[in-house]
Image (tube, rainbow, N blue to C red):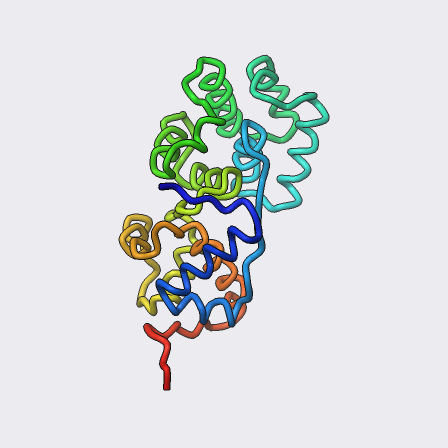
Length: 221
């Protein structure tokens, strides 16, 4: 059964279940506060905005996104199919991002990628359907599933901030790799997406100072 985080109440429920499963998340909550509910539009627009924003500052990504929406009204998969690469480049897109957006648009046009249908799939199945498209890597797929569709069990294992926050939570000597992140979060199913949101908040709260390891258990004494 798939769970979703679409509302503030959904997020509160997921956090409560995480704290029940692992009391260290209760300590994160007290130190970093409750993470905000972060939602993006779904469909082509949501996926394209994630591709555009990768490895860019918020200001740069916003500027490029604004130019794209001004140049192409609406900025949808059909517009990307028709657009010449140099027109997309003038808006500020790099060649790899243009190739990715073109590949996504073609996959949608051919019926190979059905974005609305992903909400009916498990997080793992939806992830596989996205990453088969050229240019859509695991991180992009995970961010789309978590913030555009609200899949509660999405786990962006390749995210460096999430890896570092997990290291702090579990008092590990080294930052875990993407491969190691999966087994580390297994006990947090089916709320790994909420765990990610809490860990990102913890990372932001601690990155300017040494992050004290979270104890393995909460003492009742």
